Length: 364
Ligand SMILES: *Cc1c(COP(=O)(O)O)cnc(C)c1O
Image (cartoon, rainbow, N blue to C red; front, side, top):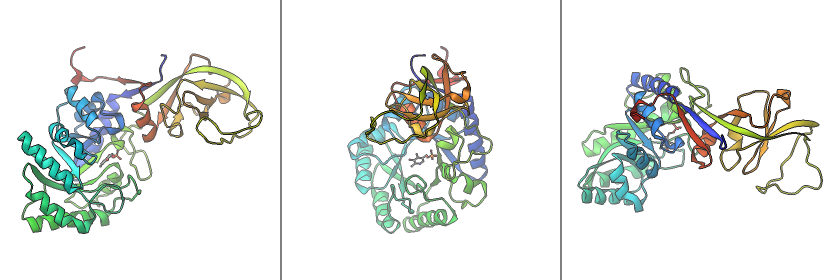
């Protein structure tokens, strides 16, 4: 294996999806499985769908295009705000999009009318996380305008928390979301089909039974992929945390001092690294680096190993704890957090290797 590799256990993804879907289902919440962290990988999307998610959401049109080209047949939800320059593609590729700008709604309306389709929209309100969303007092006029536009159908209200500001979803902000949705319903005389409350950060709230009953939609990525809720990053009960494993090959093993020799300036990334003096220790150089993963987000599965640092193409690992057990040509295994997984899936130097059955792929 000349390239580092990420293996994906599709059975574990399916299991995790089923576990999350069952929990949410008990509380009247439908789940959209989110594939943006795996660049819209079709095998992963199919595993999520086998596990029972109702639809697939992604933040990038390129990913949705790839999924559709691979024959993954499901309603698609665009999670990132539609680009004005891409409204035609949004209408063509997705059933529903999350929106906060009137200009984009107008663009979608025109595109949908041109294409003879109806495009569903969920309006996003910002309840304090300070990423996307309409500020609540500006919601009524935007909703009124959206309701009057041909070609688009306002089907819901949503919010996204815990992504930018780290705001925790709780009864207060979720009740506020329901209240805002009911305000739109009162003034328009229409019912909103969806109240889209949470991502993986909302599982605790759902499981504890404190989610307001009208919240009926969740967009879940990390909890299905990595088996964690995202407020404390605790393993989520009934899910696997190791569906993804990174393997990298050892290119060099040498005993070297733990402190660099000579006068020291900046490293390759403009930082001044500091090192702990642990005397002479066995170090391994692996064929994966900052170009491929977020080094802070990978952990050796063998607890005796310790990551010392990395450059663009090398990961440097202290292997002295393994007592000579690590040799040139060996493969070492690592777990990945969300950021590291995203980077590894995006790197064109990392081979992605789904393992397990993918019945949707058809005969080989
Ligand atoms: C990424 C994203 C999600 C999924 O978040 P997870 O923490 O992976 O569950 C949900 N909603 C929106 C709007 C997103 O951008």
